[in-house]
Image 1 (cartoon, rainbow, N blue to C red):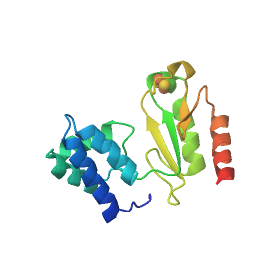
Image 2: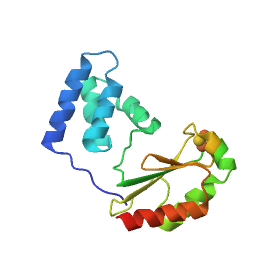
Image 3: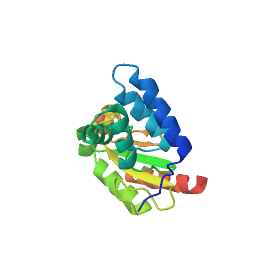
Image 4: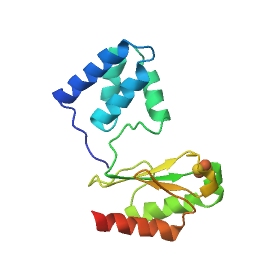
Length: 162
Ligand code: FES
């Protein structure tokens, strides 16, 4: 399941330029990964290998960073990205039920992107808005005190808008 990314010569040239520029500064890895994420829309293993060679780092380290930070992704994301917080405050207020509701509606498990590239469903760690638990974000917009009903409405809205 999921969508394919295009690794073109032009994009690879941009990545090389980013590595050359960032190598001149201390700590070139994070800025290079940010550039790679925006150039390719994700940082799959083939791109991680190129960065490892270019910056003289181990692939294990790069893979660890890419998979740890929520702003990087190994697979391409859909046009609409839905995040359900499974941090403690949200979890105790029922966020697993919200995740299940999105899963049912979109026929996706957490971490998956639909075949048509329209939706990505993700479970996240605490996003720092615990006072609004349970929290979901849709395309970076935060919805606090969310309910299963709200989750269904959001999916209906996204479908109508596409
Ligand atoms: S636990 Fe969900 S925002 Fe903190």
